[in-house]
Length: 352
Image 1: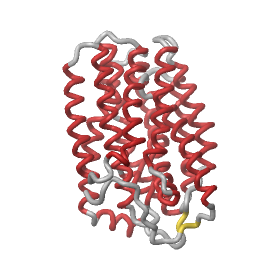
Image 2: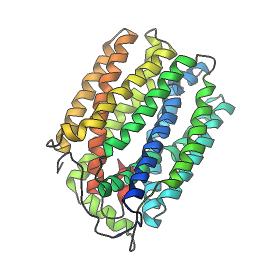
Image 3: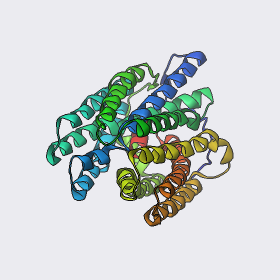
């Protein structure tokens, strides 16, 4: 993969419809920090405890596995769909707000159902609206940091902070019988807070007609980008197992809901320095090399997770997983932003 791990200062080929001055752009970055904070706080409310909740409902391991497989399957269509709609009609802000509002309301439906097929239907709908949110925000932030001279990692680390705080607090406050609190907080943060922030996020439009098909052909012609997509698909297979079954594995080893929250919080804390200082530490390391190192780290960590027999050891492994995630994700988002044709930043981010 080309280029180096640094803040790109490339100027888009099409002039942006963005009348904001430098002060407005920096206020936009402040809004982006808040969005990352509350969006990943919402994710932290649900992701660590969702499969634990399913287990409390009496679902079998196979049923939980099927429910967990919904997200990556639906994301294959939902992410490119919403990214293409945003780029084709230049309605990024409205799509972002719609996805946040829809995801927040739909997540509350989990509280109204308790059997496999209704839970599957809710999971499909939630995934369709929630999974594109991150890529839509990433594409907007990549554009903002180019204009201001900041870095993506300095914005994204606020998401890790929100995730850490929520998982720590919820892990200590909720028990096996009051997991419903997580759903209410998740819905509130997305449907109210993130929707409002999404409508205030300054997102540049492009002058001139955007040709989605022509842009996709340009992406497909980049051999390094296509290899990159293949690598991210493989990574998705591994991370799905980690995300979906860490909580259940923790309980199997004798841990508690508090230990689950701690493991996820430690994961987020380990991401933080990678996002804050990664641009400086790895300024001369190519994107591809960073991603390769991250993949090797993931493989080692997940093997260790399969071998450990103590809950505390699983928490330590979660910290190592966070280091891998922070390294790979900042490099991947930056690379996708640099590879995107003019006007197709949301699509390029959504594909990964």
